[in-house]
Image 1 (cartoon, helix red, strand yellow):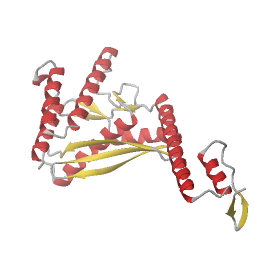
Image 2 (spheres, rainbow, N blue to C red):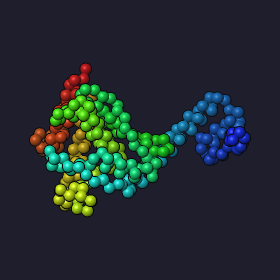
Image 3 (cartoon, rainbow, N blue to C red):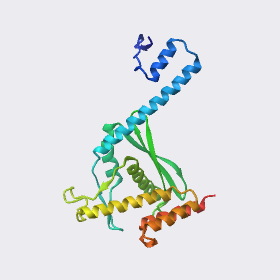
Image 4 (cartoon, rainbow, N blue to C red):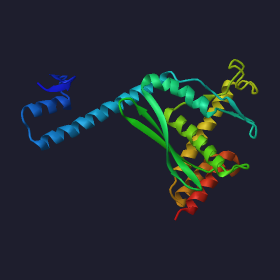
Length: 256
């Protein structure tokens, strides 16, 4: 029988579940096995715990996605006459839905230079397993932004993009019943919604592929395939995607 200290007294430690690495370790200690055997069993225990944590993570994520939060696009981009969800609408709404499942998201800057930055969003579960999505983006120098504003704008975009990718959430266009959010825009029909979502999914897929390029030759190959996917005409490629490609090419050309 193993013991542990509790309040200055020796008490019986919880008995490990039969058939687990922990129970094998306890048996090895009781029988006086050598250190090398115990080290092997401890490694096995760590692997077992990692597997259990990974299973718990995916079960929690599946439960979260079974009832995803409703995120309304609460902002208007006057330049492009389109709606988008603010970072507070995306993150605050989603975090409330993640927490009951033991899930939590955070960000970290992976790398940063004058040309752009790479940011990661890490989704973690209470049992220890985590998964991450990384995305690189060029510095937003549009308008008359000063350097700090440029960093903030780029960071905000990358935070939203990586958060949506790692959690799998998506926003929707508001309507007359959403307390005024999106009231400036008519309600989408079902065919319009399906067409928009398909276009957004397609663009997001190409953004991810272009972003993953590590050489000019890789980039050029993906760019040719991308243009072909948009009917063989560069003008058919969304403006935002074309701009991102240009920035990515510039960054790759600047690499030593």
